Length: 222
Ligand SMILES: CC(C)(COP(=O)(O)OP(=O)(O)OC[C@H]1O[C@@H](n2cnc3c(N)ncnc32)[C@H](O)[C@@H]1OP(=O)(O)O)[C@@H](O)C(=O)NCCC(=O)NCCS
Image (cartoon, rainbow, N blue to C red; front, side, top):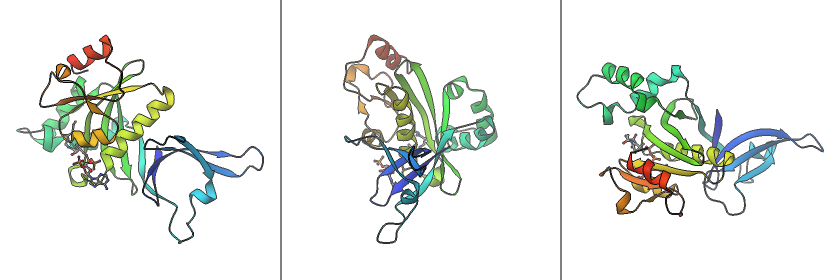
């Protein structure tokens, strides 16, 4: 899994890999901003400095958690996070059993975030709909851990990883709640003519008009 760090000034970063400097073999950390930084999205720093203290004696970067792909053995715990929202009228066991079989929840890639203690906290589905067109669905955080910024970090981290592969990638989602959270992550609400599933709001990144394929994706909810 890839670690997420909080810089002492408040911004978040995804540590991508360690690397050795070609000249002196000093270890370095390579990391990516989890926010728009016009200077650069990818930075490198000596590992000793990255993991060291500031002049004021506080850690320069503090571990917040880690992001990675979910494996089948992770699913029972992750699926349970949505029970309070999507499991109305059924037992938890019935909800989990149905979730494991549901092709809609299972399609795509499941990505999740652990906290710094290793506990699973948030999960989402990443749907690669076409080259450069990615859907984000079923974003959910453990009910006991909501409101701590975990879903925001997970969504942004998977966006940054997709942008490493293709910087032109455009993301789509249907916000059932908290559209402001997605606005802070770079999404905007699509025009009224693209809203077919209210109250869920169709949102996307990027300013370009929707292509015919993207319009169709929004019309059929992915
Ligand atoms: C929607 C949901 C995934 C958000 O998860 P979360 O981990 O609580 O999300 P975040 O903490 O990143 O953001 C939620 C709010 O907490 C706030 N917040 C509180 N503390 C924060 C912190 N330390 N850092 C960042 N945001 C913080 C955010 O500003 C945000 O507020 P806003 O939406 O009013 O602007 C969660 O509420 C959930 O699981 N709901 C049930 C399932 C669901 O409805 N999913 C949505 C499908 S679209």
